[in-house]
Image (tube, rainbow, N blue to C red; front, side, top):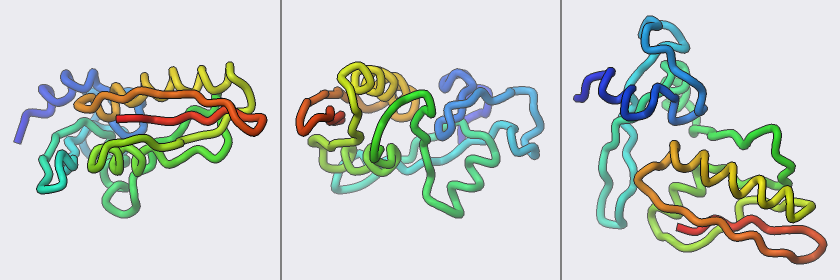
Length: 146
């Protein structure tokens, strides 16, 4: 098991689930205190690898009770956003492309694409993603490709 300070420094003291800052000096018994999440990341169809990530204690604990939720920014105008956690899981296992949101304008889609790539750089730093915005039917589809 790695040292909490090593994992915290590697993750820039940000919770990998909610993307909020984690106070390195907070008590590990506090809901907002630091904890190490042993996340089993699917690397291939044959098996998985355990990755240690920094999480708030509350985020880590809730992940054990319910499926993790990585929220979309409330500042984005996206319709029918796909669950980020599940989309990343599927793409990490099989690759390919998924439509992850619909947007009413090109500007909204471009903003959502930029935000998503930035968020995924912290959520799944071991993976490389690309976004694609495609017009159609009076809206713009945002696709994520691994």
